[in-house]
Image (cartoon, rainbow, N blue to C red; front, side, top):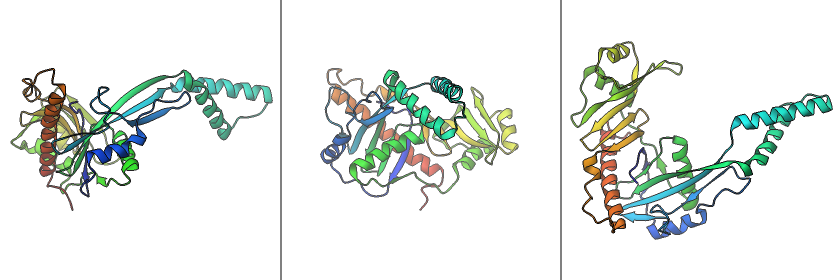
Length: 301
């Protein structure tokens, strides 16, 4: 339930669907497992788990959603070996060359033949819409997974205008200045991990882990022109994260003190505990997102 990554998207228009109306629109795309010859399936499932039938959970002005994704695992080496065997058989029997278009058709046939026997892997993607603050926060480190979530949501509701936020000051330049001048904002502390990159598409990359980020070693790379692409931080004694130049918040780890605040709620009252934890987490994430935007000069027009 506690999110591990955040890709935040700004809602360019207020979200005015009620939770009940949203649930009705999501229902036609409820999750259905992969058919035998299907490589991928995804759809909506109840965010509170199997004990609930509701596809939407609303609490404290926020709407929690959950996307389930099932994918057949078909090793590329298996497909490639079978393809080469089939090509060699045709070329030997018919005395001709098998060219690209025919190879692609043969590959598709092999994949379709193997899919019914392939293992499946299921993953879940959570997100919540903060109706008051006009954000949607997707728990996904991958941009593709986040966009897949948003695209299905758009398909269901008809229109869902949400954009990645743009800031006035380049995050990479600001984070580089933090290390160069040792002037981290007061409510942040450095972790022990960073990624440094040379400007340009083919620039070198240096990854530092378990080191003092204010050390001479890191400073040497910065003076050589490398810039910070990712930086490990601790925020306000509430959580730790890896802040990236694309504003993605990775590897969120909430402080034990924060996660234990609702321990006095009886275990039997699971719904109340989940809502309380959700509120704690969402308050922290929304506050952190607004703070991060402020660090980089605020949102650009």
